[in-house]
Each structure stands twice: as structure tokens, then as C-alpha cells.
Length: 110
Length: 120
Image 1 (cartoon, chains in turn yellow, purple):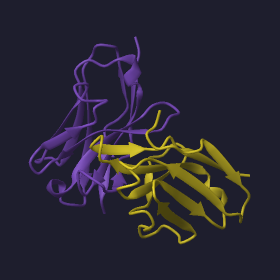
Image 2: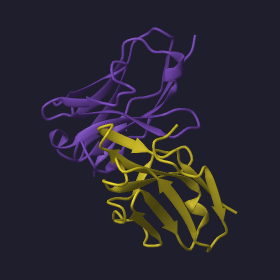
Image 3: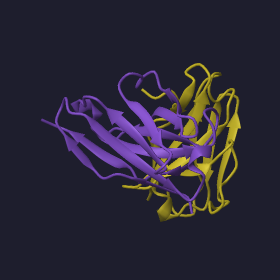
Image 4: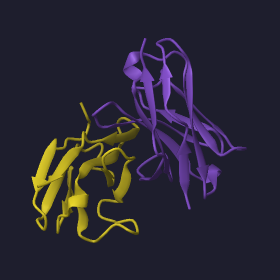
């Protein structure tokens, strides 16, 4: 049972916009930044979004992150086949004094 | 170029000891924290613990405290994750990842992962 809650799966067609949500509590998302990671099949996770909405260099601007209260979202517009992956949200939890992750959302590009 | 290169896959029997490694390059090893993250087969990510190689300060998730130990060797820029007696439930992929601080911060670089299989 993950501390942060994500829907297990979502899908979209090429060119579409999809949103992946992440729900937490006051001790994690409510008081700390949210991070998003992409895990392509058979590979290690990769940082996609930091500090709620910032993109590392090399991450396209069709990916965007936002946070409101105890929830966060990752939006992917202009969906491409290479976006098919697992997406994980993460945050620091003040009560646990550690990082917590969501269970991951598998994105399928139809 | 920042790189974290992990040791190869391991196959162990229950009760055996195990130590896997994560060698860093391309940055100052003693200036960043290294975390370990577990991924059970087909499951999500779990933070296990973290170490600051500069002074060996370490912290553990309550779920893993006492089950594993984390260490670092500054001379070889290598972090380690060790078990004294592995269990079948330790079968997973283990990732090391770099972070700027023990707190709200990103894991900005990841190792390629080490698959650990524990089976009798």
C-alpha cells in the first residue's frame, strides 16, 4: 500500500492530452514539493518533473506538472508512442522523515 | 557526465549475506547523498535508506531499519547496500539514486538497477 495514491492505469491516443494524478496528505504533498519519474519498460526511473512543475533539461515542454493542496498532476500533451511507460509521483513525508512514492500509473498509448 | 553504475545480478539462498554496490562518477561523490530504492516484481518504488558519503551520515526508512545497512567508500566513490541474511521476500530490483539532500529533493540520477533473486 503506497503512501501516495495514483490510478493504476490510463490510456490515450497519439496527439491526445492525458493527465495523471497523485493524491497525498498534509505531511507529504501538502507541505513539500512533488517529483515525477518516468520508467520505460525494463529501465531505471528517470526524473521528469522536480519542485512540482520544473522540467530538467531535455524533458520536452509538452510535459507539465502542477500541485494544489494535497494533490498533484502530471499532464502529457501531444501524446506519442514513446510516452508509454510507468509514471511515479514522489514527495518527502515529514511524519515518516523519508521519501514516499505513489504506486505508479501505467500509461498505454493506443 | 554523472553516472551511477551498479553491480550485476545476484542469486542467493535464504539466510545468505549479500552486498551490492553503486559506483559514482562525473561529480563530487562526497557532496551528494546516495539513496537506495526497492522495486518488487511488477510493483512500485520504495525508499529504503540514504547515506551522505562525506561523513557517512545515514538514515533508513522504518520499513527497512535493521533489515539492511548502507555504507560508502570515499576512496572508490562507491555506495553499498548490505543484507546479513536475505529472505525470499527480498527478491526485487534495487536502484541507487543521487539526491542533493536528506529531505525534500529529487533523485536526479539513477543507477541501472541490480536484480536480486533469493530462492532455495
